[in-house]
Length: 140
Image (cartoon, rainbow, N blue to C red; front, side, top):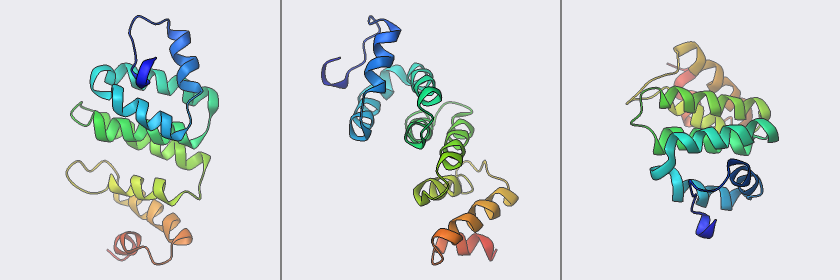
C-alpha cells in the first residue's frame, strides 16, 4: 500500500497484515489518509486487529477515528466511548485515555452519565491530583 493508502482491491488478509505491522506513527498516518474514503470499513479492519493484538493503542485509534473522523454518523460517539473505555481497561494508567473519556461528558453530544463522569474523574484524580477537569466534575 503506497503512502499508507488503502486499496479496496487488495485481499482483506493482506490489508490486515499491513495494518498489524504499523507502529503508532504509521497507524496515525494510515487512519488520516483513509478515514474519509473508508470510514466504517476502516473501523471494521482496526477492530479486528485490536481484538487480536489486545493493546490500548488500537482501541485509542478506534476511539479517535469514531469521534474525530466519523462524528457525523449516528452512534459514532457511543462507539468512540466504548473504544476509549476498552483502552482504559487495558491500561488504567493512561491519563490521555481518561481525559478522552471525560470529553464525552461535555457538549455537543453528551454520552457519559453523571455517575460515569464522576467515576472516571476520580480515576483521573488518582493519577493527576491537579487535574482541573476532574476536580470540576467531582466538585459539581
